[in-house]
Length: 122
Image 1 (cartoon, rainbow, N blue to C red):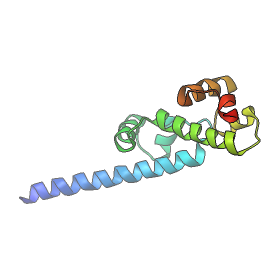
Image 2: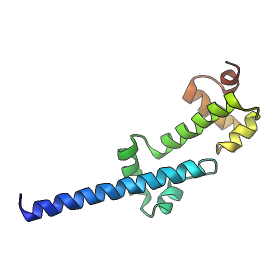
Image 3: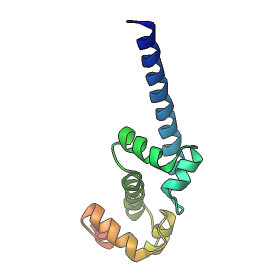
Image 4: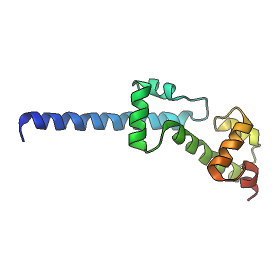
């Protein structure tokens, strides 16, 4: 292998490691802030890359889009809260980052197949 090829491989590895670091930082930021109104632009700004590039590498590394990841995180927390807490639906809704309980209920049903009330009772 010539020197040029070794350099190209080293650069590719370094870029891959940096993108992993960016995604790891992004995921940590998302987990810490998912309960507020968080956009792809907010997260890409936090990790200091363009929204387009962030969206692309996030999907490649995580296997889902930013929105899918956020929804999964929020819905899993909603399921936990519905089972383990005595919080009202509105309190759970706000706690996981939704301002509209109807929107939350629609998303929850799409995600789980049942309404939040049915989930809590079942």
